[in-house]
Length: 488
Image 1 (cartoon, rainbow, N blue to C red):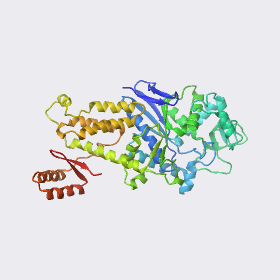
Image 2: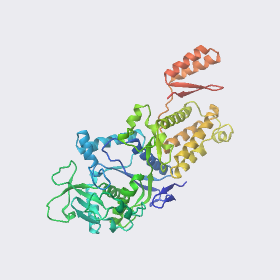
Image 3: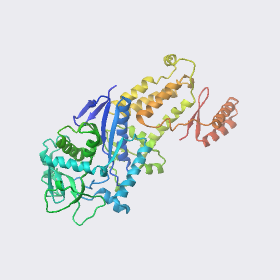
Image 4: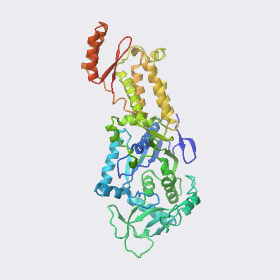
């Protein structure tokens, strides 16, 4: 099987071919850890987790890096405003270091709850300050930098293809800029590589600027901190080398952050920074952008309070395509929750089916048998087609509908288990983990209830049904027996 992905670099769906056969080098833009991750933030990481899973399903060894932005992300893309970590520190009455640690741990907790495969490298920007300074040094040596009062900047006019990646109209941007935040900048699109700490200010996070990076000797020392864009290039090249196989991130990163990454990386190395670029669209809430002021800044904890699990949210996200704008509503999340419950109840059938002496091959050829071998391959192929999770879910629904319409003794026990395991492997929905078998006591009650039905003792049957419901188990009566299911 092959994996095909929409490559922002080429503007079309390309067959994925890695630089080294069987190995995929991936970099994912990670969170700025000044607050809890919103459901919009987390949706993007579910998409990229799906990418990792389908590559692994196609026998790739995935080596992945995700950065943690714990310094340098200013409140304005124009390199102005307050550092978001410093702003968060003032809000919570803590230091920037404490804020970074707390919200990094909160993000990792969210990742675990969503069953996201952890990147091999979760790299904090503050751990790679020397690498970032070395990258600035390379750029300075090649003539791509200049210094002004508030820091060291990248001169985008020195990189002729700067506008190509995001198809930017730099002249229109320059003309349309109502306010030139920093008139010392040579070009409107120039960006800060290193910001100097303002005179008379002491930051929680700051480092001494190396003397060889400062143009003037008028000051013996300048404290400073890295620009936001610098970390991704420095971290990825330090761990994965000069050229990535895939770089992922949100569509909002395309015109500034990723464009700047390409400019500084390729200027430093003379090589292509990444062969594939994947961008996910926004997840809105009730048709509007996520914003605290609008009251739609939802976190996993907020969903918990309303009775929805992380897997309910994961199912909701997987129902859409990463390149289509999503719209979160609680009605939509309820539908996803019901879909997942249905899948879990079908997964629970593995506890109610058994191997038989009939050979698997024979059984799969029986017209009354539900065969799932082809469906397992079909869902991997669907996801391999530009992360086509909606189509994969449709295939699973179709297969599960056939199972529901089949007699229990016609369901191939081992094939059902393999099919559910495939779903868990590529979609990460924890169907196996979330569907334990019922205990012997509950099984005995079901047997007694079936006996009461056979004896037409409806009062006893109803009483036993209510006892089961109290244990979180409901019964679906068929012609020959009763199938137990979870009520939630």
